[in-house]
Image 1 (cartoon, rainbow, N blue to C red):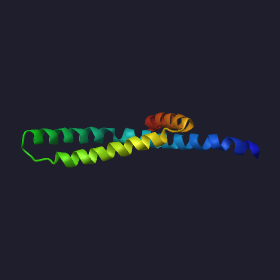
Image 2: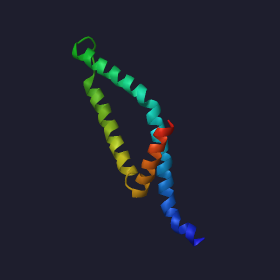
Image 3: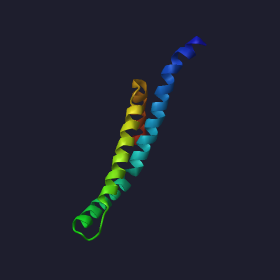
Image 4: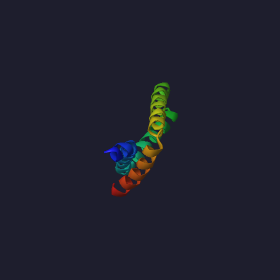
Length: 100
């Protein structure tokens, strides 16, 4: 029983990272094409705003993008704080991309 309790702290972050990486890799492969379309739409809106065809509230867009960037960077810092988690995540990410 002591063998299980001694390796349990190693297995939990490794398996959680693997599962999380697989989900992210699978989703990234499935979302790739729609993300390109959304990026093209954003570029088109930016051009239409630049050409004064439509009116864009740039300050609101900056506020929203700043919030998204701050949330994303804190989430990445939290997830990458463990070396075991990062290793499992990398392996899961690669297998998720292959499966997706």
